[in-house]
Image (tube, rainbow, N blue to C red):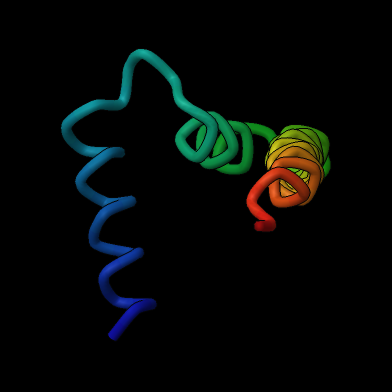
Length: 70
């Protein structure tokens, strides 16, 4: 069910809001136009940015939990 919902959301974004290019549609466009070798760097960059944001939030929330103790 989750996979079907994700595919339907991606389909709606591609059909309705193709421009301006967001991350997933840019990867899809490069894959369709130039193949896997052109879409891979964009996908890896998007994953690295996402993981770094999660890591920063995790570190900040761990440091804030020091002040929550009574």
